[in-house]
Image: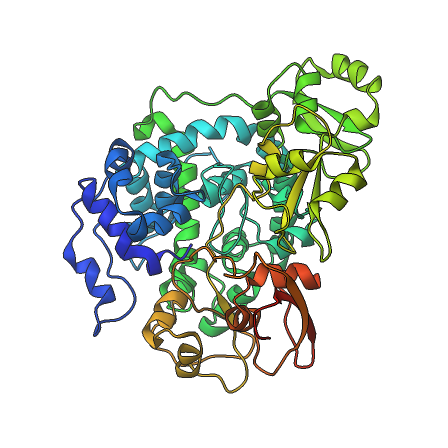
Amino acid sequence: MFFFARFVPLLLILLLVGCAVQQDILRGFSSTDSPVATAIPAQTCDISSLEAAGEYISLLDTNLVGYDRSVLLNEDPSEVDLETLADNLLLANINQSPPTFEGVTVAAATPLYDFPVVENDKVRYFIDYYTGPGKHAFTRWLQRSGRFLPMMRQVFADHGLPRDLAYLAMVESGFNERAYSWAHAVGPWQFIETTGQGYGLTIDWWYDERRDFEKSTHAAARFLTDLYRRFEGDWYLAVAAYNAGGGKLNRAINKYGSRDFWTLSRGSFLQQETKNYIPKLLAVLTIAKQPEKYGFTDLDYLEPYQFEVVALPTETDLEVVARLSDTDYATIKDLNPELKRWCTPPGVEGYEIRIPTGSREEFVKRFSVMDASERVSYLRHRIQPGDTLLKLANRHQIRVEDIMSLNSIRNPRVLQVGSDLVLPLKKGYTTRPLQELEDDYIRTRRQSYTVRSGDSLWKISQKFGVTEKQLRVWNRLGWSNMLRPGQRLVVSAKGQAKSAPKNSGGPLKKIVYLVKSGDTLWDIDRKYDVPASRIRNWNNLRSDHILHPGDKLTLHLPASQRG
């Protein structure tokens, strides 16, 4: 994960909690030195001290560190989860400076593993790190492993893979189910959307199977199997490709004329994250197989989830599922982490949902006598031009007052086209669906740009109002000026929530915008002061849609705004 762009505010957190960070690190951000941060000595900061000093973090100025904190936490800055903060620091290579060269590599003498384990200076570095500065967070990872590893190891065995390869999920996410990277990688196996969909995972507004511990593990097993074949039976290359991408690793092999991972990792072509990936996995395996030997005693391993599965013929509120299962809402959400909203996905017949062990028989009895209309208490509605609360209330035979109350609407005549409403279909509604309209992870919201023919760093910096040095740091370009058409660059610093257009409360007018050469949604967003997300909604565009000259976009603007 790329955290260097937000590293200076993070250092203030570390300083306040008593970590002795050397001033050398700041040279990485001076006006004359390289944009790559100088390494921090490994023993300067115990990550666990962050958790003990939560009161200090909560006192920091929100404008200064709130964004960085929310990115690390993947949640709202006002709800600081110090445990997740410590996890993400350990996952993000913060305060880690392994040796450049691996030294002498020796195969492990013990027959503990079904994956090829070796020991060298790099592996020993991460063993020392996980048993030293990172020990507190790593202890949690080991304890969480009890919940997931038995299932993951069996899935890998069923796919003909080494069972020990399942520990890769610890390197990816620390078995933290809320893991969500700046690159929009999600879940225990950190799939990006395109790769997840390519391996059979469904991802939409209602549910995201990358978050499901079982389904994502099957997808990871298929992905690793393909990589193993692609790299001709070399597990180190296959695992490195899981991190860097198969194309990147092939280019490294061609560049250095070697298929040895350790040789490839000595060069500058691969990212540091990829170079550390195999040593981290080997260190994790070494410790996890013999925790007592490395000082991890009295571990309180989490128990595996116990559940039964029922297939639901129609969409059903999770509050209903919880009530019929004699459990609570939180338990149903824990057992079904793929569900992002308050109910099962509409239109998915036979959706299989997990409920606590021992509750299936009674659940089926109760569910079978329940009318379909009783299973759903809420309806999501995306506001269209011409919608009014009165029309919606009449259409669904509900009260305008209830819509206003649930959605905290003060003026019923002011509706924002493209935004979502939750319609309460029954009395006794709660605000839970409204709370779950937004994803329960926070995206980093960093603007990106696709390089076009003729672009230069200077041109791009001028276009987005940033400096060339910022572009180099954010994209880890070093001092290279080489750009290639199609390359995606990060072109903004920390994200800021987009404010609504000033005149959005008045009447709206519809205009058609003709896309010009070089236009991006971000350009149009800035020109008309309307969030790009709404432009996508109005025009049914995917998040990765590429605009082309001559495309026509529908925009809904305040009538008083000049189009």
